[in-house]
Length: 386
Ligand SMILES: *Cc1c(COP(=O)(O)O)cnc(C)c1O
Image 1 (cartoon, rainbow, N blue to C red):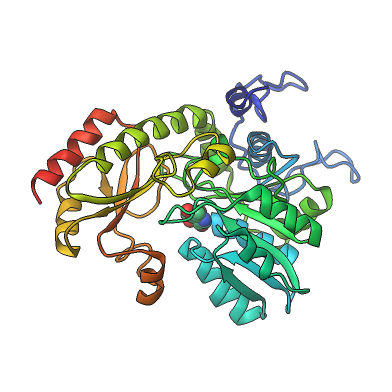
Image 2 (cartoon, rainbow, N blue to C red):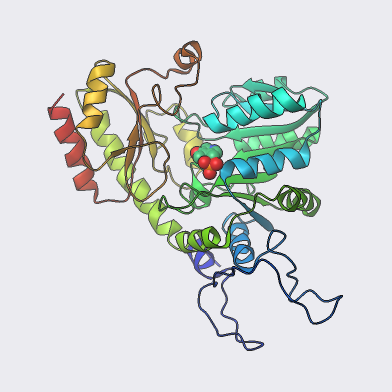
């Protein structure tokens, strides 16, 4: 089965048996508990909805299928999914190697919760240079955690190469695949142990549900994460599971349109006299364009753009836009724009922002699936007013 067919059918095969009604989509099962006819016999394997719920189960099957994974687990947010993985795999004194420009919420979870309260040791390295990952490994290293591309500098890490190193040393490799979605990048196929997503972004795609997903192949690893999902209880609700099931059905179509619009927007911006630099993995000017072409099946919908001028002219440019809403988050059908230095990355110390190249005139764009002529017209109009 190809991607789009899986995204529509897996987990939602119509059921005609046992008086079922043949629904073509998974119904929203709100029941917290499931009656059984014999003490020893949970009905169809369901006992209590935190442990397993039929709507969430349908979603978990679909999530696994679209990442080419054996197992999928749905959580109440991307950060809940991350917490589930960390709690399942780490104990006090363990060491983690992580990408140095992680999603801000992930960095906060690592530093202020797991390092501060549970004495987990983190090394933040530039994982786009594979040798730096290898050099950071110590006997206590249990986990390598990467994001590729990163946010907002869109640096790539070579997942296959890092996976080989991790495997040799018996270290678990986790890839936060939120930015690419399973349509454009499949970390498990590249050798990673766990693919993780904030479903709040591309997977759901309509900016109306917060959720997270973990996809993996190894049975014992799955059982460990599932044990935490049930024990800590940060599960995705039946209604959110329904929304995400619905969103995934158009994931391939949305991603194609995001990418098609993005390359046109990137090329328009790259030639504009008021633009200093466009960072998009689909442009030949991206320093890792070659890796992007082999590791990803498409270049996605996220780009960062450094404008000429200063903070005031950048703010003015953003204010002049109509179709790009000024908001954090990404991956929805509607275009969003934000200023990382004052918004998503305001908590990153100025010195670190400078080191990463994150200036006050750098804007991050999540290119939506609107008609691209309207998007480019909107950008053109906003430039005219600054
Ligand atoms: C949004 C995001 C998260 C966190 O997900 P939530 O659903 O907001 O908890 C983690 N990683 C990346 C790359 C994200 O963009």
